[in-house]
Amino acid sequence: MTLQTGLVKFTLQLLVIFIIGLTLSLKEGLIVVCLYIVMGLIGIPVFSGFGGGFAYVFAPTFGFVYGFIPGLIAMWAIKKLDNKIHTKYLVDALACVACLLVVYAFGFSHGYLILNSMKGLDYSFSYLLSIFIVPYIPFDLLKIGVAIVCKSCVYSYYGKRIFRVR
Image (tube, rainbow, N blue to C red; front, top):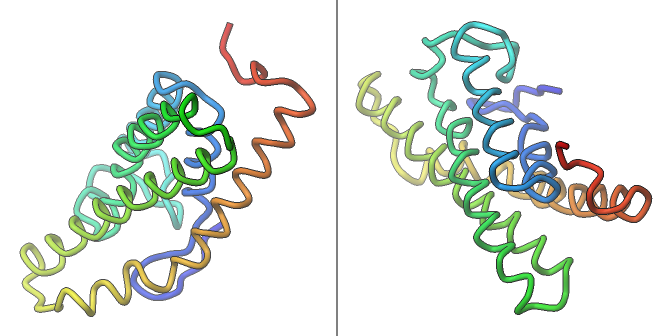
C-alpha cells in the first residue's frame, strides 16, 4: 500500500520490517531484507510506488530502505535485553522504537544529502525534518503497536518457532 503525502510516500514497509525483526532471527531477517533491497536494485519494482532499478539509490527516500538493515540490527541488540527486562511487550516496543529511530536517521541523512548536495537545492534541516519525519511519527507508532499485536497473536496460536526455517 502506498499513499503519497508529500515528498515521502506512506507505505507499510516499516510494519513488515517490525514484524520481521520481532519474529525472525537476526540472520533470517537480514537475509530477507537484503534480498528485498537487491531485488529492487536489479529492477524488480518492489520499492514504494512500484519503484526499482539502481537509479533508485539517488532518490531522496532510498535511505529509509537501506536503513532497514541497521534498523534490524538495532532491534536485535534491544531484544538481547529480554532476559533483563521481564515485560516482553516493553522489550518489543523498545526494539521497534530503536529500529524506527535508526531508519529515520538513515532516511533523513540520505534525503538531506541527495536534495541539498546532489540536486543543489537549499532545504533547511527543520524543513526536511517536517516533511521526512514529523508527519509519519503517529503512523509509525501505530505500526509498532500492530506489529506487536501480530507477533503476539501468531505466537499464541502457532508457537514461537512457526517462522523458523528448518
